[in-house]
Image (tube, rainbow, N blue to C red):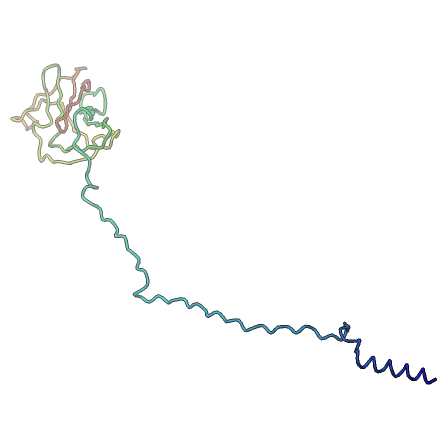
Length: 211
């Protein structure tokens, strides 16, 4: 009995001195590792966007609108004979008694560039001949001739709008009173019409017959 009591006392003393529970884990009651408090991060200062003042703002360069120059106008050169085809025209090939031939001009620019030509009545001359006998010239009794500069485009063909009328009489600068002029014979007589304009003559004549 005494031995049992002594053993119990010895066990209690050992427990107090040794403390065998030190180092034992208690999972459900173990405090969580302290979370290190995050050190306040430095808040980045917002980068301010500079505001452009009128003096800082880039200026818009204005391109001036080009104004037309004199070089852009009237660049066509005068026509030359080798580029212009001149033809005499008539409103018919044969004319009955009392019918007067109406004569016109046709021009064709056969060159590669536009050109200008004086197509006024001052530079026109129609001639009607029978063989070597000149019967009529449009300039013999011409009144108030005029100039007119026209541009003929490359490849363009133009014709005179108002025909010149031959009254079937012989002209002369001294006989502009047509009442005293000789009348050209008819009956199928052949006449040839030639024309010149701007110093350029027609290359061929136009035949007409009078009855």
